[in-house]
Image (tube, rainbow, N blue to C red; front, top):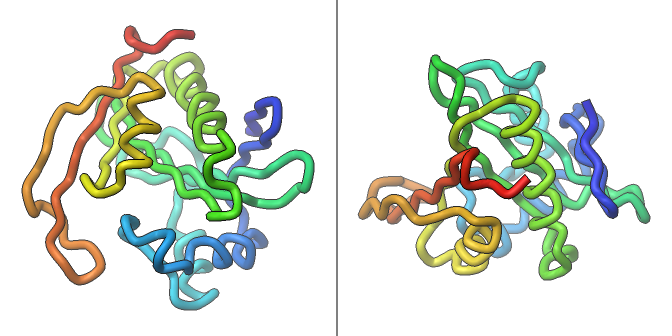
Length: 177
């Protein structure tokens, strides 16, 4: 399955993507709000091996890569976590190479995947988890129509410290197709 936008190709992650993923995912400053920062290429290989091979499996993470059509470069990745046994709720997360920030790529890729999740997979609700200090991600999700549902205090242990967690969500009926 391949999803497309005007500027992007969004396809399932593959083992041969490891070098490009390592390039942007291993940047500690850019990914300081991420729960996973690989230290070696082997870490990326393990990550790719652990993600679901098929989309829409309850309890699994499915990972896409985001490819810029013009350069054919992987510029980020986007994960879907199929949360519940009823399989109607999905958690979403996106990571973008610093060289491609502030160009609308995150908005464009998320908009296309959100449309896919609601329209083609028939999901009811999408959530995302954001560090309160990650103001760029908060603005991004609000721009896409997500609303803040919760602020959990020191609820996640990330990169060696306790951190707060904001939960944003969007219902299918709230999405403008």
